[in-house]
Length: 195
Image (cartoon, rainbow, N blue to C red; front, side, top):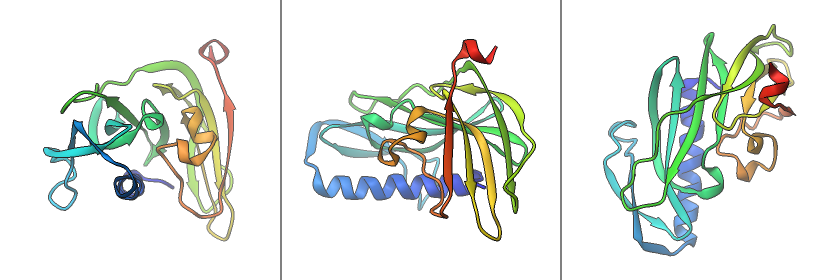
């Protein structure tokens, strides 16, 4: 299961790895500086000023559980990773992780995310390939219900909703699952079909 801490570690590792390789191969654009976080001090102390490579935007990765929103990271991100969202159950609570972007000097992206009327079955279980779902409403650009299964002795299943990028080319998605041989199946939904 991709729990809060695991998601943050996975996301931060992926985004930091992406950014380091991107920074090494891209030229720095003088007119775009963004806020960044220093995970060695406090992952929520995001007051660093960072120069961004050309073609990137200021991106904030956020997590919402109930009405509480937390900043997971602030980085120079790829445009195609903007406005993506992913929801799953973590310890029985719906958690939505999403990205928000802006393109001006030291800008702060919008942090709010709204329900979109699309309903998907949610459940998470380790040690099994089946779980009993409960329907939840998706948020932001999440318009695909997904089922992620990883076989093997431990096995696991995660059901929830995510943006179309989650179901397509992994390079275009800001979220990636553990490299455990799992497979994802998606069904695109519309708000009308969910009613």
